[in-house]
Amino acid sequence: MQKVVVDTCVLISGFAYGGIPAKAVELAFSDFQIIVSPKLLNEYKKVPLELYKKNKINFEQLSSLVRGIASFVKNSIFVIPKKTLKICRDPADDMLLECCLEVRAHFLVSSDKDLLSISGEKLENKLHHLQILKPGDFLRKFSKTTKLH
Image 1 (cartoon, rainbow, N blue to C red):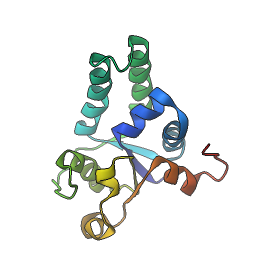
Image 2 (cartoon, rainbow, N blue to C red; image 1 turned 180 degrees about the vertical axis):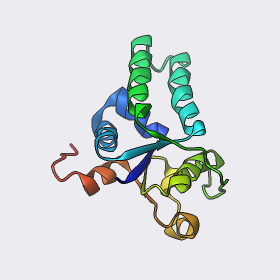
Image 3 (cartoon, helix red, strand yellow; image 1 turned 30 degrees about the vertical axis):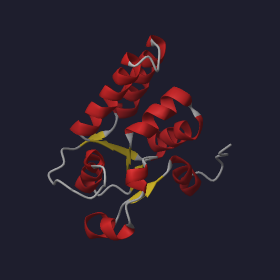
Image 4 (cartoon, rainbow, N blue to C red; image 1 turned 90 degrees about the vertical axis):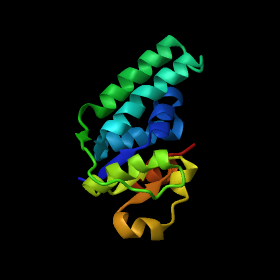
């Protein structure tokens, strides 16, 4: 089974707003091994609380997000990355690449411009097996029947 890491922005957007991110999360959940690390789990936990504190979501939405994330990670593979990377122009995003490297993940699903801007040359050195895909591209690659509109 192919391995995938799902960026927090895609996971939160999928559960909070639906649409293409939700379909990408559903595809990852049903057809891939989901990989998480301690830093990624912490971010999954932290972001919904920050949104709630900033009044961007209400309590019901927070509760729904927490339940959705818990369900998503329930059967995931938990890894502790051993290597530190300095590849992304946003150093906070390197933790996603470290998670991918640890298990030689095939895909990172993200809508983060810093991650999407990483050239194949930078990835080729240590992460030549990894494809960083936007949610819509991930769907197009693996779901022949999914309508993106």
